Length: 277
Length: 123
Image (cartoon, rainbow over all chains, first blue to last red; front, side, top):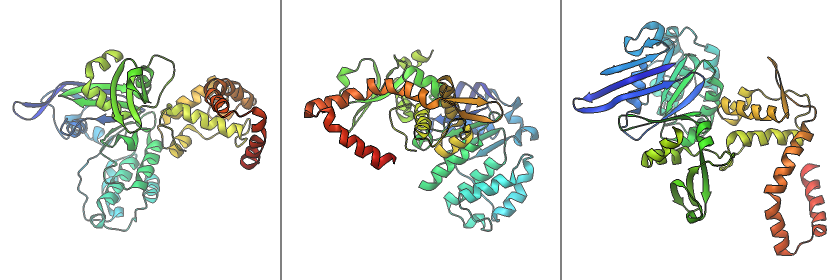
């Protein structure tokens, strides 16, 4: 559904952000895009959405070249950016203005999401808090029913109850014909929702695997003494002992720890990549 | 439902389904919540629930009626006990027995405790 080939891009001369970046994403999944600050997560999402153009290579979504921004492409893609501007109108007016761009917009679903998030419909958008605005935008994004839904740090600014509400609405929204891409630093907010992990670092994609493959090949566990465990690929020590990643040699599957995996891939890239190749 | 840190989520959801059956909350030939309903209420990816259902189908604990949904097998309780008993005996009993041995407790002494536990939890 999303096909990026040999993408290169830089904001400034001689300071490349992407070099020969490859990435394909399919429908029916929720992808978690992880990367350090400044690794290019938001830039990559903007490339997919056609808000930035490649210097070299191609970025195709549903067969359309993103940079051409054809109407047929734009009405099947929605991007919830991290920073956004909403006009000084009521929620109702906002829908009247923007919903017509999306032929599959579901008015009833939009009302359901707003209710779930406890957002009053009559209020002016500019009078809302950041978190409330974000909830309006997320509700709108889900209600557009686009094939591709991209969210940049969606749980940023959401209070504790809304994070659970967010997980519920996303779980209800993903269908086999939809591709959802979420960039996040708060992996613990979303680790049971994300089914495939994409890690971006050093100008390219360095890891892209679905959770099932990860837990087939790697074990995540907590041990009290490291010395007794062979083949530790990565370890993080805390009060409870050592949280470690090893090669999965049995048939058992452990629960994935995405933060640990992220740190492991960044610091011990080669041995981990070898396990997956 | 509170997820534990250690086991894969799809296995934990399978355990949850089995518990509903063993507690007779979900009856044989009763339709169980759909993949999406469970995913929403547990706040997990629907693909994870799908995997749970594939596992339970393989173990003949649930069955699928195309286009209608998933149902509890007529002999689900028997099947679950078959699968779970072996796992319980090999995984959980050893540390329990170790405790009994170290504290010099006999199995007869435990009986009233067990009866009391059953009465206060499952009656």
